[in-house]
Image (cartoon, rainbow, N blue to C red):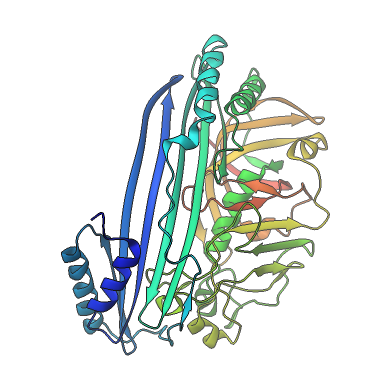
Length: 458
């Protein structure tokens, strides 16, 4: 297998296919992780994975087959399976002409790896944090992961594209010695050079100190500060549901009553801009479409087309939806392909989460949300639970920890109701960050956030 480079896998697969055309995607991923519990490192590991996806096209029919490949025989079996599946498929509704001849200047370069060395500075500091937590009666649990995926996309029409994507995230939960209170800190990173274990532990200690006083509150609508982490939780779901095809078919909050999409309609405050840009600093993402399979929001026929900076909401109006070329032809709007990052900016947003808290007379500060599920696609009503820290704010000060709640809210409704926003900063969704870690969001103050019931979850 040592001689089977990603480029070789692409060329061999394209040579072996019996279909009219083919796209081959090779993802070479190395990852390194650390896991700890009870103030002790428990596991660490380094993994390497090579996955090959062969997409066969026979006229308007297509089929894709993915698998891990270590020999040429396995590759040929994968190609044969894709050819057979395409021959048996019905014509695809998203059929379009494949992208033509285009090549990355670094196509011939080898995959870029990560290694356990990415934690050379973080790991010793984490050891120091374990000692300090133990001496001060705190217990730390956590996980860090860093991976680098090098993607090679080749086609029978001449595409030879390469993209390197580093992705890292960290999360640490602190508990008191009695295991009755918990707090969480987490975030995303490209290389762990900006992650300080000392700072993580200090923040956990600060939040656990807020829990010295416990307050039981009933369900209700509260003046609530959603930190950037919680805002990312909600915006990612709103983004994932923004398929133009689903909207056109009347199946989402972006659907116009009577038919069509709400593009052009005001759906948020005029100060709101929700956008993506593959070149956004700190959140860099693939600049071309990588689609192993088709869905309402992506098409295998679009593989290799350029991904552009896109406004999804601009000046409070719905500007764009996730469009394949097929859905663009259906809706009459330009094709606007998915970007693997998301940014929420609020014109006039300034300051920090702490500064928003300082303006609250009586309300709540959340840490993060979890177990988020959809209740009603027409309004994008979501339900979920608070987790690892709901704090009471009185006269601008945090005065205690509050029980957890179940919430019922729509992120689209929140974008039209919030009262104040902080400056946008790089953020990380607790619920979805493992799948979509490249977000930048502000904290939002919502005057009437709906805590629909008290939760016994801890």
